[in-house]
Image (cartoon, rainbow, N blue to C red; front, side, top):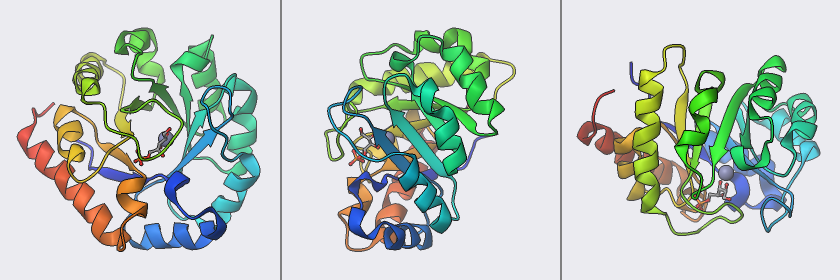
Amino acid sequence: MMSPIQIAPSILSADFGRLAEEIRAIESAGADYIHVDVMDGRFVPNITIGPPVVKALKKVATRPLDVHLMIVEPERWVDAFADAGADIITVHQEACTHLQRTLAEIKKRGCRAGVSLNPATSEETLRYVIDDVDLILVMTVNPGFGGQKFLASQLEKITRLRAMLHAAKNTTAVIEVDGGVDEKTAHDVVKAGASVLVAGNAVFTKPSYADAIRAVRSSGEAGRGDGLIV
Ligand code: DX5
Ligand code: ZN
């Protein structure tokens, strides 16, 4: 069965001085997840937030916190983010020497385990952990900043991952896409096989968050209508 399209606004593009208000606003505008971008200035050339801010967000949020760790050695931080209230913890394939072990540790903490691929990383790197992931996050920009241009080269990767998941026996994993997703590109990423859409600038730069979320969702729904049913 196809998963419903879910929208995960990225608070990287929110007003950091008013995070609680911004969370309430995107939730009442229809957000399904709250996407939290954690950057360490080493894995990516930018620094954002850590576990104390996630803990503060957890007090306000009623939707699951989708925590995207763009950090080196993410296994050292799984406990801290789980304690802070992360519902989904996504690590980068490129940052994990023992990816299967890290995914198992995330699940042991009761969180959903995600793995993300940078644009240059092949989907084949996930072949032998495909039954261990709950979510695959395909980056359609090089991670580090909001508001970058969508890389259409990644659509083929999404299609190949969809086929890999379809062939796997024991998985209910979903494909999430992050970077440059808006009311135009959502169509193509859903057509290729994604069902969870991260959107930063496409939501937070708009006067009405509800209209913006609706526009991304309906573009995705149109793409699903045009896509293969798998
Ligand atoms: C990029 C982050 C994204 C980013 C998305 O490094 O992982 O979540 O905030 O922002 P937009 O939708 O503006 O590309
Ligand atoms: Zn992200």
